[in-house]
Image 1 (cartoon, rainbow, N blue to C red):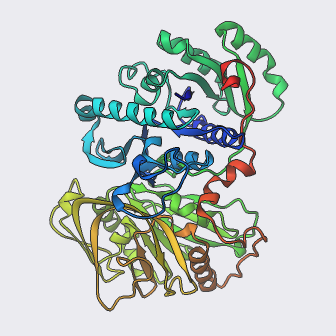
Image 2: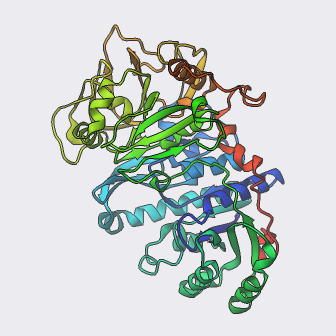
Image 3: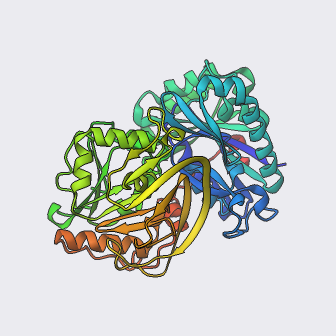
Length: 517
């Protein structure tokens, strides 16, 4: 059976996901068979992984595309961590996924498959035992295949009101017989108090499992920490095994905390140092239930491209193009958009528009049987009317990896060859017979608008380049030159993991059981 290290935190956003990814890459590069694991995640940014019985015995051979039943949903962080470990992402890496859908409910995904939408109380009362069993079985399968499992906790490991049902932290430590690396974020201030207080609030059996402490996001002279490190080690008896620098590697975010608050503007990609007149702006309506916003990251990484989130009560302003990404609640977001000033502006916008998944459904003429998907509407709801398509909702959910041959039409006129990505959606879209279908059979293009169900489409260089060439040309802005490395064919998997290598995010640990693992 594998050795398991649980990377737990004093709070959310202390850097657990990045540290797990870095450790997975470091161990993999040393020839260790390693896999990530997060028993329970809460995120609307999901990817498609394989079911465990669809891959090779050791989980390191990609079976390719095939039977859609071979696929399931996993949180994006575990998808990236699996790639960092150089193994095929599977649902075992994240056996329980909760996708918030509003009004205190979440869609429950177990072993990659949707179970239903439940309030938190119902989940814990009626489904928690099933979730715990799935987590244990997933860990056992990984442990049989690998030598080391690097598990990620969730939030704080010391939430004393949740310790009897904390699947990602308390239950994981126990079911995996894991040692614990406790991570604190010094950027927030009070890191020593956070580490000490967390240790004090842990159940006794978990306190005994803590093998080391890590201080993350440090800036400046490390020697200034010496007296604090000495004091915390003396008070707790637990060594500080790492002080990690404040480097943002640009790994995909897994929750909405990376987005601006509703009603506020926010921008990605404005740190390239280019003058405003050499940039274009891609506007993104800040829908209440945005999901899979990682689809926008490849655009924001391009020189001269700013991705700006637009409040619904705002105007499109200086946006040169629009992208409507996925949404966990398409119908309610459509109604919110139509009730606000921005809805009419999207209908009248004359520049390039791309809708992905739920954003594609919004751009159609109508959505039918919406009671399946909405908490507030029934029957049929008119769409924004930018694409001659209609969508019928049902309880069936499509989850699959996919590759299609792309056809060049506005606003991706220069695209050529195949494009790959993944689909996660409810609803079936009917496209009028005379309408171009530039990507998958359910995609559509009309006028300046394009809709597709293919998440990750902008990770394909040919499609991303074609779209951005259109945007820059429309704006009358010369597109900035790319470096030779950027001109190479785009590899979606490499792009997700590249920040780990480029920033050297393979932590050096010293001391105690963490070093041995």
